[in-house]
Amino acid sequence: MKKGDMPAATIGAFHRIARVLQISHIAALFVLLALGVLLWSNISDFRRAEAWIDRSHDVQTQIDTVRSTVLHGGLALRNYAISPKEEFLSATARLSQAATSATTQLENLVAEDPDQLVRAQEVAAEAREIVGWYLSSRVIAERDGVAALQQSLSSRVNIDASSRLRRLLDDMDEEEGRRLDVRRAQREERFAAVQRWCLVLGAAFVGFTLGTVIHVNKLVGLGESKVRDLHAHADKDPLTGLSNRRALQRQAEALNGMPMAVISFDLDRFKPVNDAYGHAAGDHVLKTVAQRLLHQSRGGDLVARVGGDEFVILIPGLQDDHTLGAIAARVRTAIEAPVAFGPGELSVGASVGYACTAGDKTFACLCESADAMSYAVKRSTQNAQGNERGRRVG
Image 1 (cartoon, helix red, strand yellow):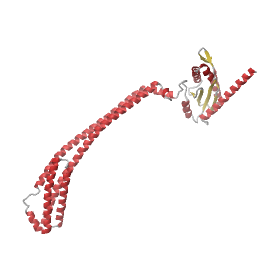
Image 2: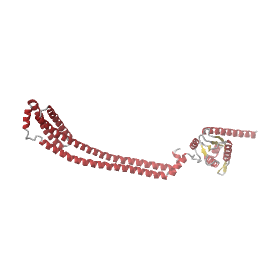
Image 3: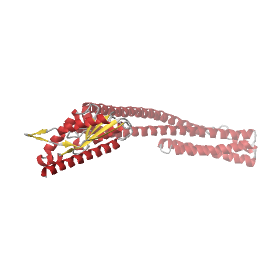
Image 4: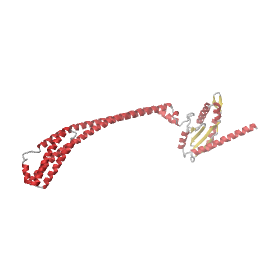
C-alpha cells in the first residue's frame, strides 16, 4: 500500500512515535557518551592510583631486599671467619650482587619521585661502599687466608658500618609508607567516584529507557485504533471498501485443503457507462455493486474487488455445486438491477462464473475454472445478443 493511501491520522501517529524514538535515542547517546567519558576518566584515575600503590609496594620490597642482602652478606663473611667454608664466600659474593641489583631497581622505581630518588641514590652509594668492602674482604680471604680476614674484620668490630644505610632505608621506608597511605586514600576516593558515576550512568540509562517506553506506550495507546485502521485499510479497496487481492489471497491460503467455493465475474457494459457518463458514474456503479454483493453474502464470506470491474467472492465451507449455482444466480440478478444516478438510471450486467471443491483443488484452480465459465457465459451472451440484432435487421 502506498503512503498516500494511509489515513493522515495514522501517518501522524507513526511520525510522532518515530520522532520520539529518534530524539530519545540521540539524547540518550549524548548523555551516555558524556557520562561514559567521565566514567572512563575516573577509572583511569583509579588505575593510576592503583599503579602507584603497586609501585609503593615494589619500593618497600626492594628496600627490604637491600636491607636483607647487605645484612646477610656481612653475616656470611663473618661466618667464613669463624668456619672457613667456601659456601660462605660464595654467599657473600651472591648477596653483594643481589644488594647492588636491588639498589639499582630501587632507583628505577622512584625515578619519577625527586625526593625519594635522592634517598635512593644515597642508599645506593652507601650500599656500594659496604658491598665493596665485602668483596675486598672476600679477596683478602681467598688470597691471604682466614687470619688476614679476621684481622680485617677486627678493625671494624667496633664500627657499625651499616648503621647509616639502615637509617637511610628506614627513612625511605617510612616516607614510602606515608605516601602509600595517601595513595590508598586516593584509590578509595577514585573507586567511590567510579561507583557514583556507574550509578549515575545506570540511572540515566534506565531513566531514558523508561521515559521513552512510557511516552511511546502513550502514543501507541492513543493511536491504537489508528493502527488497527491502518491494518484494515491495507486489506481494503479504497473505492468500494471491499477486500483487495491481498486479503483475498491470504484468506484463500488459510483455507487451503478445506472445502470452499469461488464466484468470479467482471461487469458487462461497464465501459460504456464510463465513456458516456464519466468516471464519477463508473465509481458510483462500482460502489453500488459492492454493497449489493455484501448484502448477498454471509458473514464468513469474503467479497473482493481484484481489478477495475473484476470481483471475486470466496465462500468457505461450500462444496455443493447446485447450491453454489443458486447463489451465483442471485448475485447476477442483484448486479443487473438498475442503478440510480442523478435523474436517471444506469444498467450493467455480469457474466458470472463459479467453482467449488471439497478440498482437493487449490484456490488458483478454482479461479481458473470460474474465470473460464465467466468468459464462456460472456461469449454466449454476446453471441445471443448478436443473433438477436441480426434477426431484427432481417
